[in-house]
Every structure is written in C-alpha cells, then in structure tokens.
Image 1 (cartoon, rainbow, N blue to C red):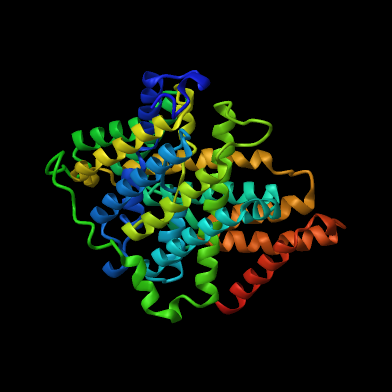
Image 2 (image 1 turned 90 degrees about the vertical axis):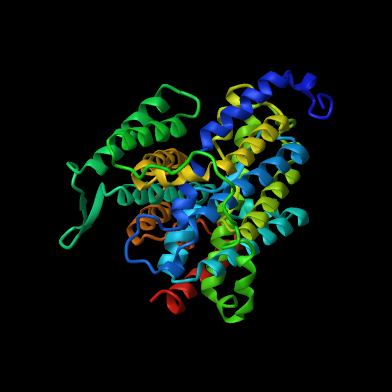
Amino acid sequence: MKRYFQFDELGTNYRRETIGGITTFLSMAYVLAVNPAMLSLAGVEGVPDDMRMDINAVFVATCLAAFIGTFIMGVWARYPIALAPGMGLNAFFAFSVVLGMGIPWQTALSGVLVSGVLFLILTASGVREYVINAIPMEMKMAVSAGIGFFIAFVGFKGAGFIVADENTLVHIGNIHDAHVILTIFGLVLSVILMARKVPGAIFIGMIITAIVGLVFNLLPMPEAVVSKVPSIAPTFGAAFEGFLNPSELFNVQFLVVVLTFLFVDFFDTAGTLVGIASQANLIKDNKIPRASRALAADSFATISGAILGTSTTTSYVESTAGVAAGARTGFASIVTSLLFLLAIFFSPLIVVFTSEVTAPALIIVGALMASNLSKVEWTRFEVAVPAFLTVIMMPLTYSVATGIAIGFIFYPITMLVAGRKKDIHPIMYVLAVIFILYFIFILR
C-alpha cells in the first residue's frame, strides 16, 4: 500500500493521509445537505411536484456519487482530490434547466449523462488540451465567478434575505424575521470560522446554525439521527427516461444544456487538478502526472452520478484543505470516499438543513468562486466587456446558460473590432453562432 501510493517519495504516512482525508470530508460535507435541497427545489413555492426530485433519493445519490468518484480518483489517479455533485452545476440544473427552461428533471439527468460520456471521450482522445486552449482564460474565470454570484443570489433569495419587489425588482427582506436572523447568524459565524482558517468551517457553521435553529424551534426536529438507507428508486435510472422521447434531446436547447454541463465540469476539474497538484508539489517538468486518469475519474463520477440521480459530479477545490492538512496521495481520497459512504445512514438529518441553514454555505462558496475575477484583464475593454456581461447576466437573468451565451457572443465581437482577430480561436466563433441560435429559436 505504501509503495503503491509512494508514501516515502512524497514524504507522507498513514496518519497524515487519514487526517487529510477527514479534513477534506469535513470541508465539503455541506454538499450532502445543500445538493438534495437544491435539486428538490426546497423552499421554492408554487412548483409542481413532478418538477421536484425526491430529496431522500437525491441524498443517497449524492453520497454514492461522491463515494464512487472520490474512490476512483484515489485508487486509480492517486490524487488527494475529492469529488461530489458540483455547486453551481446543481444550481444550473435546478433553476436554469428545470425551473427556467421547463425541461423535466429526468431529461436534465440525460443531459448530465451525455456530458459525462462526451467528457470521457474528450479525455481519451486527447481533445482535452485543444478545448482548454480554445477558451480564453479570461472567459473561463468569468464563467466561474459568474456562477459564484449566481449561487450567492440563490442563497440570499432562498433564505428570504432578498425578496421580490414590484418597483425595484428585488429588495432586502424582513431582517426582523427570526428565520432571516438565523441565516445572518449562520453567515457571520461561517465567515468568522473561514477567516480563522478552521478546518471544515462551512460544515461546522451549518451544524451550529442548525442546532441554534432547533433550540429556538425555528427548524423541524428530525425523527431520528440514524436510519436505514432511503430508497433511491425515484431517481435511479431516470437519466435513461429522457432517451425515450428523442424530440426532447435533439434540439438546440438540449445542446446548450449539455455544453454548459460539459464546459463547467471540464474546466472546474482542470483548474482544481492544477491548483491541488501545484499546492502539493506534484507537478514535474511543468506537467501533471496521471492527469488523464484524474480527468477520466471525474467523467466516470459524472456518468455514475447521473445514473444514480444527481447533477454533474466534479472535483472540489475544498480538497485543498486536505492537502493543507498533509494529504499528498490517493489514500486520503479513499478515506474521504468511505466517510461519504458512511454518511448514507444519516438521512433523517436532512430535514434540519433548510434553506436558512444552507444559505450561508451557498453565499461563502459564491464568494470563493468570485475570487476568479482577479484573473480577468479588466484594463482591456475588449476583454472586460464580455467577461462582465458573463458575470452580471447570470444572477440578473437567473440563468447560468444565458450569462455564458451573452458573454460568448460578445467576445468575438469586441475582439474583432479591437483588431485582435488573431487571438480568437475558431471554436469561439462556433460557440457564438450556437448561442445566437439559442436566443433566436429557444429563448422566448
């Protein structure tokens, strides 16, 4: 075992790897509450039941997808990187695809499945590097930051901190309401813990907030702590149902959905891999060893997650917390994966993690993703405009896809008129045309 994971070469041991794996789990365990709430559209009023995914089934799917993806990453790719249904991608799935476009969640899962298969093909064929180089770095960072803003907005709205207003569209909610105050408490607490660099700060903040909510009778009391595993039947295999109706798949709208899932997962994984490999000093001769295995593990996780019944599974930047705690090998990922599997028996606790409790996590994750704005070259107007439109239009239109579409349409326009034709990759023209057709024929 030690030889397989190269403990001696990397200067690590079982204790450091175990602590690193536990730290990573605690840092991202919030997804076990947030993802089921997001995909079931919990807290969103006036939504038909057939548009909501079963929250207990999604919880099981989340646990299993995280276990499978992280285990493969650890055993095969041997990286201390954990995977789970991605924040931002689940928001796009629930609010843009299902709620916004009116696409059945079963068909949306089909889109996740197709994107996972495409991602696997791209990885195996070597097209990965070509596509990564085609998308300008500024636009990659803008997409990531925009999703951060969107996630934070979803959190504020779900907690009642931001409400609709006939005159100004949005307005601050009733901050005297006990539930809103609970969210504010959770946010302040989580920010303090994050600032103090407490391992698992987001997760700890959610736990304490939930306890406070229970003490003041603001949250429903769970019937138990541990129970038998809920049925996954409501979501298992639903991804294949979408293929029974080809008319829902072979259209521009479905193509946009698949491309968005593929795009965000593609670059999320690549960025996380580079960041963690750099932090752990694993990069050799400017190359990342076993990079194709890590990317393949991500695609297998997405495919299995879609079949189980959850949105795109991707690598988590919170894995850096485990690396900071000493993790250097895939053994840490094995530890993390087993903890996700163990969590499957704690489903009764889901009822405690309402939107008031999960909102602080969404807001903080949004803030972390927004840090990518610093990597955009704002002094160049031709770059700043499409990047800004990508970021701002996601929360304003309540759609990740629309934000990406607008930004990617403007990018070749501003670059052309600025005389930077040589800097535009042909793929950017293709994407611009696709998104223009999206606005003409799909968006009404």
